[in-house]
Image (cartoon, rainbow, N blue to C red):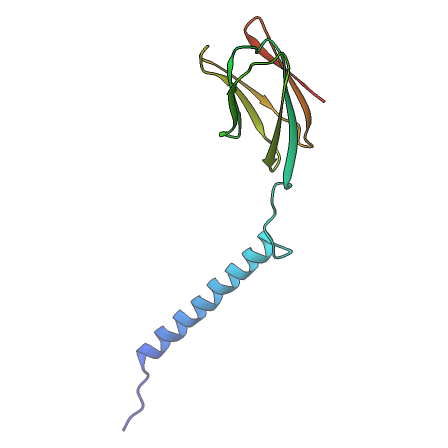
Length: 129
């Protein structure tokens, strides 16, 4: 009996070597993206106090943050304070006035705080503190 090499054995060893390399790449990528073993969130909860100060009485107003409707009502007072809790940083506040078919957007500060909105001459203006 002569000893012949088994061609399937070489293919199986190649597949095992490739599987080990792929596993090593996945582990290195995992360690690079999540160094402490946790996902890195955008900073947790950020709290904003949005004040509708003047010019909104009788208007239907919708406040959206990052495409999520946070508050939608008709404003019945001269000044109205709306607390908003938002996840993460880099938030965009959109003030929609559906009856007037108007939309205004503003960047919110990353550290939260008080945001005062005023409507003058049909335009919404923002002051952030």
